[in-house]
Figure 1 (tube, rainbow, N blue to C red):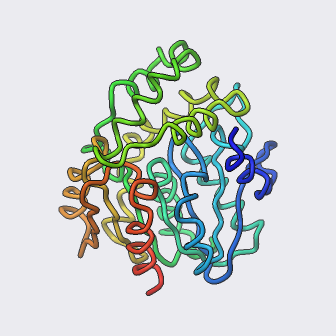
Figure 2: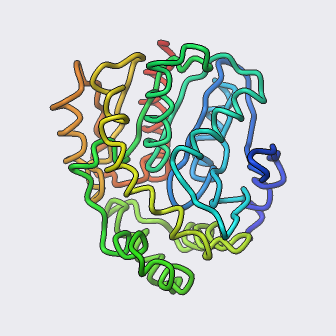
Figure 3: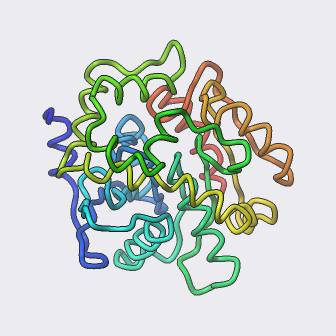
Length: 288
């Protein structure tokens, strides 16, 4: 791994959960801000907004099971429910009573589940406000790519561990905006993060969360239709998975929708336009 990734790992900590170890970074002072990363990478997704975020907030950024520097058990059933349990356990272990949240991709579904729990359980740590980045908020308009459909199918057991690095890189690059493509160094980091601790053996299993989105659609959409907390969507409209079409669905269904569209940006706003993304999130979250 590059020194920057090594330093990210060295600056973090681990906490025990369900018999495994989960990695997280914690830094900064101010209101607690939980950063919930997406698939298939990890908390390093936030490195381009980290400095600004930790100047304003106490930032907590875990790696989900099966990704990044957290444990990646091979004989394990990965689920959004368990990833939500992990985040809840981390908040409790750190003694946090309330948090602000930014969520991306898979993290969007994890936070939707966390919000759904708070519709009936008032004893959980309070979520004060949520800024969603690109993700499958409404599965009926989510557009998985061919490689995603293969990996989440029964063929994923064979294809996943053998997926060539060039194909993986191509799949990642195609969801970025045309003028904000990841560099060769970025791509090397992406591959190193996936391959860390035999991650190729479980990457396809983690990716099956797209099926859960369909199964739990109504449960996870409910907190958007009757929001318990302020919500903002910060959307990269050129994302083929969850871009402008997802923002349109959000405007259609969410009461008084708060949407910020970042022109020319694709699936990873925090990497493609970090300054604009943090500004849109901070302007919103700082008000709550």
